[in-house]
Image (tube, rainbow, N blue to C red; front, side, top):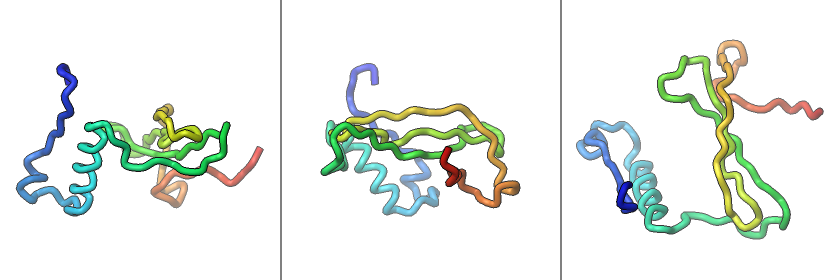
Length: 111
């Protein structure tokens, strides 16, 4: 990274077959990463309304965090030209046993 050269790291388990990730996903991740590092964009929105911001909301667990702790992020936030960024939120508690769902979600309530 110091020399601004695209770099791809592949772990040994991925190469020797110990990685349980499906080969199709490994190939997709590898080639999409290389395409992006070479300056390409794997997709682009089309026909979006001018002056509008579009966002996708994602949930994730930070490495090493407690099982009940999750964070949210805005993923694929972009304008009508497809120019975007990623924003990460603060940690929050999520207990699948209390909520009845392994996946966090927004309520349907509108204020």
